[in-house]
Image (cartoon, rainbow, N blue to C red; front, top):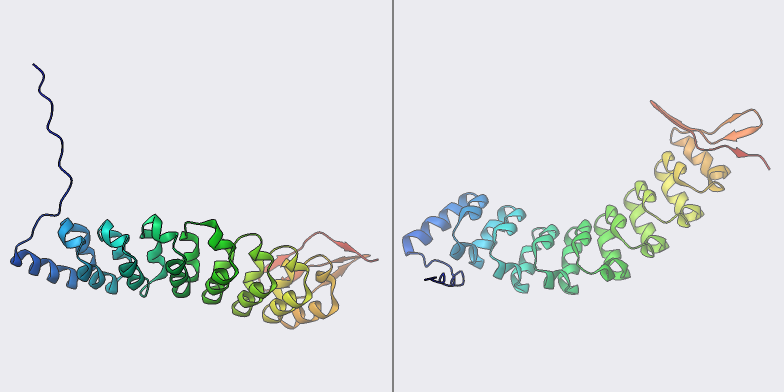
Length: 236
């Protein structure tokens, strides 16, 4: 005779005694990592979840699924770090309000948004880049072509020219803003702009120089301990 195995009951949080609750509250208050070892009932408690996330946003990975799917809780958690977005439920990573809150706190958290459409939306990408210029690398191709967003990024760091579209690397205003900060930015400019007298002068003022070799102009940008030479540009 075959006896069927009993169906497993749905997982339910173990009811804690008052003494157990107090012990876990003290443990989490002393070390957020204690939440990772706590029983489900503790990890489902929003008060303990917030207490842990206040110490370190990474504690969000230990809270119960009910909290990671709770919009109110996640919006509160995002006040401590936008990167908490990566542990939110898929539904919340699809929520525009939640994603916007995340990128306002940490621009690069845009990469954890579920919808590609968020990386194509001007307002969200601009908020992300305004917070952290490095967020530009996670933007859509179309947004990397946007001059306004590019300037927002470059105002923070000339290195943002690494992430802008090739079309903007040929835009004088964009490259002027970058080269004015650091001469090395000229290496990312279009071939035409790398030969621009004004930009070459500004690069030289920042310790970089363009040198001539024979009848060819070699756009060789030199700084202490570093030499970079792209393909030669012939004189017209």
